[in-house]
Image 1: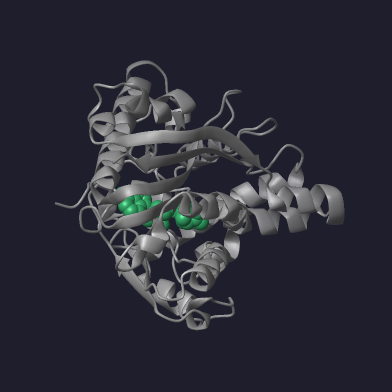
Image 2: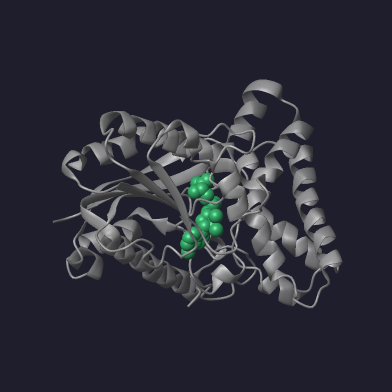
Length: 368
Ligand SMILES: C[S@@+](CC[C@H](N)C(=O)[O-])C[C@H]1O[C@@H](n2cnc3c(N)ncnc32)[C@H](O)[C@@H]1O
């Protein structure tokens, strides 16, 4: 059965995602040594059959091209006799055609695919809350900036659009949904991993200082979203019901929430043999704010460069909030106006705007 949010979830397609998300690519490229270490910790030389990988929640595949090129290139040299098999995974509404064009070098982005022989590239549209590859076959499961998407939105968020703006019972409902989905994610991986197989996961979350995406000091991005979306209610563009129906299907977990299934020996994840090797947080600076502050200092240019990175992943949620009875020709101008209002606000007062990334990095292995 399809997960609830999978019915509308996808990044903005046609290559928009990769073009706009330099920061996400920087995070993944920074993961190269961690992925290499997770492979070096396994006895791959004696393995018969292909060495296998997944890239879960890959979007259009552009942000992980450099990482896979480096990792697979090294492995090819070290194990010339082994087939390598990489499965890209995302939800059914993902733009898989764009993914294949990017990975097979049909766009401006240089790809590794034709430089590595005996390499088999596949794709799956099975949710990462379910097993994706056959039991006991996976050597390395990778995922960046994806596990915060939850399979259903457990409650409407009063006067906000994201769980970070919720309190009390609503916050608890998101926390509980986040825990269920994290457990399902890990249990599915426990089933897929070969003995000694590794997970390398860069998850959006909340760090020890309470920081999260776009909330690292200065303007808080999700508060801006909520305020500007509310302004469209106030001027009569959208209805109160549409505002209420706009809820990001996401939960930002704390480090404790990420670690819990591994630390509780009664948890099914622990019982399934998954063990935590490493957990920590990392802060990645917004490249658009950095370039504005340290280089060009042009507020209008910053605003124009910056908004597409927000839009690449947030637009589907705002579109989904609008009434299903609105004709398509009404939706596009509303959404354009909304992001234009964000761009205007940044251009007028650029200080403090930034979409810094906060990740919790989890490395785990399958015991046995
Ligand atoms: C922000 S993008 C990250 C893309 C890429 N990994 C990166 O770091 O640049 C999140 C991706 O996760 C996917 N996603 C969300 N929920 C998912 C699920 N249950 N199973 C598989 N993919 C999912 C979304 O469709 C989206 O493409």
